[in-house]
Length: 238
Image 1 (cartoon, rainbow, N blue to C red):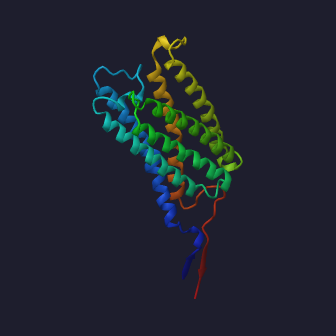
Image 2 (spheres, one colour; image 1 turned 60 degrees about the vertical axis):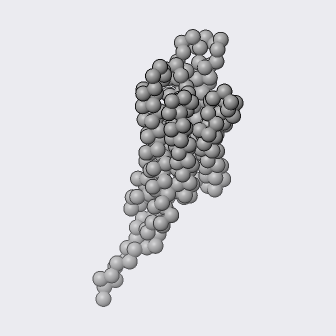
């Protein structure tokens, strides 16, 4: 008795690499980054995670270490974007996929810039501009990927989540900037640091849930990306 497995059921090596990029870049990396800036804030004397921005940790004691972590974090987010592009080939059409991935990569590049150009007085303008680009590109990625996914029945819920994430991110960004801007009604409360952390977790949560889904699907016998391809077997008796 001889059993032959159809070629379509054998996972390409590139997909396995993309699977691990999704896990490391999209799941482990965001969780580790949130833990890193949380611990750094707790260990710095006089620092308040409620009042102060996360980027304040990139200046002063151990600032270079936090900046290095931020750059590594951004590079791994771009690695996730590569994995996302490869694993979503059968889900998103080329236009939606590459536009969304380009925005994800732009977000990573902007965050690399914020790590290299800190909010120290000499580089704060570049830092602020790069931060704005990162936020806009992230919202754009949520929007584009969401619009592309709602067209696919198996991923419609994930598309809706992405669209909701775009709206929530927009609201949180507006409230955060309001909190950090002197003279606004929210400024006296001094909760800008807390709001920035809520925004950070909300955006990175998207990477975590998508990274985990892609990792699991790419490792399953039948990938439910777009159209599942059943494994076919043939038995030949001699």
